[in-house]
Amino acid sequence: MKLLLSRELHHLADTVALAEAVAPLLVSGGVLLLKGNLGAGKTTFVQALARCYGVTRTVTSPTFTLANEYPMPDGSRLVHCDLYRLASPEGFYDLGLDEALERGDRLAIEWPERAAAVLDLEAPHRLVLTLELTATGLRKATLVEEMISA
Image 1: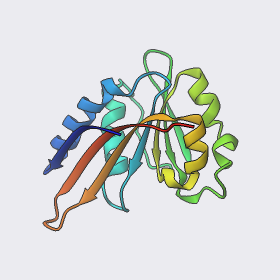
Image 2: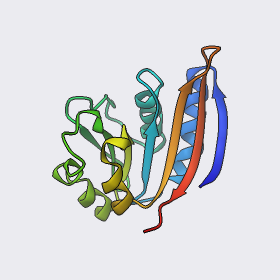
Image 3: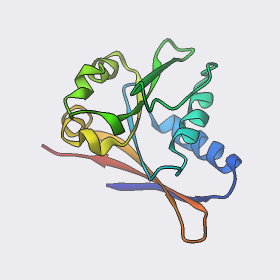
Image 4: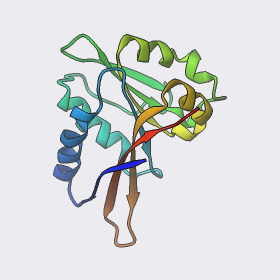
């Protein structure tokens, strides 16, 4: 695991700046795992990330749909997933997320621990962004690059 960045997020502008720093690191066919409690700012981050990629549609939480796809100007898609309600890890395949990776889409996945075993197989090389609320009420963001070996 390699630490790529760690910073506090005081304002929405800090989240936008974080997305601008992460966007070039999330390459075609790449996976970004988003970790953090409810209200930590995962969806807000994905909204900012989508703007970095030129997405013009409104980005909403995929809490009930599990996955929302947003076309990007280069023809690929940003796929925003919320796996909190995933019935089983194999639901990853039911959502077609393996096919999205094969197409070169970028995946931003909230609650990745719900499909951890499948993600280890399908996306062994990934970015992990942890958003947490500090004791002082600020948000802290930590981005690492992770490589899972078989």
